Image (cartoon, rainbow, N blue to C red; front, side, top):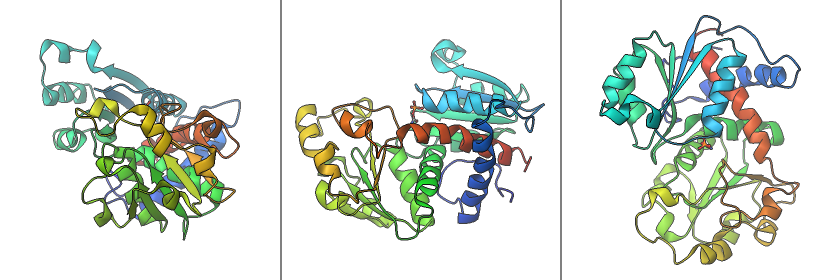
Length: 306
Ligand code: CP
């Protein structure tokens, strides 16, 4: 099944068929990752550039591994060690990288919309690896793939997304993707961390964490993004942890087999307590492994090798 688009800029506009095509590609790649020879050559001769203007561990390394496992030439650029520091502007930097015959450019930037803008200037396919507070499509895809593998489907599943929704590109991408696939999403946060129009995205919205978690099949917690907050949106980290953090008492309101998820990095003891992060219901590290398989699938589909 092909992906009928040049770029992956967001979950908005990605059809159910497109999502399923990525999951099918990820299935084969996940099996490869479980072997002793994690290598094939479907992207042999292709060049992948990872262009990161913002810090990353999981996304950057997993795209690098994905490209290498597929046989591509992979090069990483981080803004602090580049000529961005000499004043080169964003479009010039991207066009110069494009001129090196890149086939795919994976772009993370602190400003919403940057991958979309650059995609209009580049011959390479563009993958959004997280743009500001907007979208992080491959994170949503790996989250949804993990849910699919653990729960067998999405129809009627109740997914609670808790925490700093206002600043979360992960929440937006998951909400769009999970709704497309038929899950029921409930969003819960302190009022100051809820985007004003979030209910228009077709989800239930509450400030009551217990009500959100009650009978949930999946409980996804999100990191408090201190770096995107310039005013105090809650009284203190301790107070946030007590009232809104996911510990075993709050988790007991969910279904007994509910999955615990987090995109990482975790603020342990703030939005997620260690007893839950490391508990039997946690699939957080499974999300990370699936992230490599999903990104391999995305790269193959965008390069037209499936
Ligand atoms: N989940 C995620 O995007 O993590 P990184 O910031 O480490 O890439």
